[in-house]
Length: 140
Image (cartoon, rainbow, N blue to C red; front, side, top):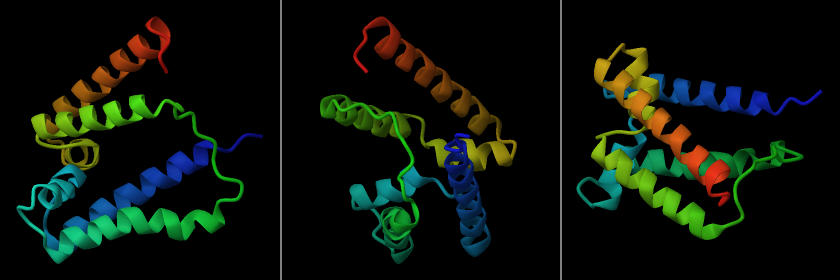
């Protein structure tokens, strides 16, 4: 029986736990794009932001030996598509003033209308994009 869904469930639970600990620990909403954005644009290089980045990079490296065999992914092998997608996601998070962790995880859990609307818009945009690129253009 295929159990790959358990990795998604576990990841979602860890993101939710991280958001709760972040909120309880310093009273601020965890928004990954805002945290990383402060590092990228050099507006805030606090220990809090650097610790978050270290955790985002370090935890998968620490957990890798436990994942044997590695969960299967369906990421495209076209590196140009990956780079363009990453840039578009980065631009979208700046335009929306937040990302999936801020609006989706934290916003919806607080019943924030702004978070709910933003989440519906980016999920809808993702559905349209993947439909267009995978099923219409055959790129991915």
